[in-house]
Length: 165
Image 1 (cartoon, rainbow, N blue to C red):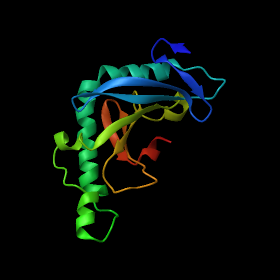
Image 2: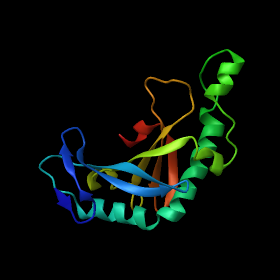
Image 3: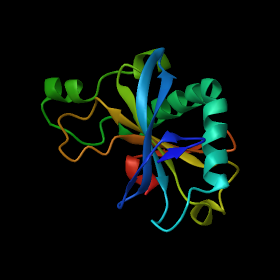
Image 4: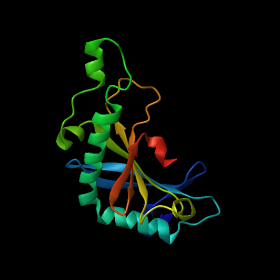
């Protein structure tokens, strides 16, 4: 189906509607999936359209808040939280990342997740999740990447991707 806000979409039973969005991140054009969570009987709501439009309109400013939040999360919570005992291998798993410019070399946008209004009604204005793949932590077969939750144009939560679900 073609949507006025999201463009070309497909319905997938596990999530709802999925599409793609090209965004500029870390100075490069990248493509992220867009997941609009809803039941099959539901249509995409104006709330979901407004959330997405606000994210895209403020993207230039918010991406710097995102990288700052992920950098802080990486260095204060995730770095070194698990991994091999061998020091050399451990350093490969957990590189020193000290700036946003370095961080964007290690993360790639994966998904923008927009939940239904009834799920997000207790959250702030324009609540949305942005999920990233990441290149630290070794060869994690159950990679859960990193995600941020944005409310009112601010990153209010950072964690594994499953915070979006």
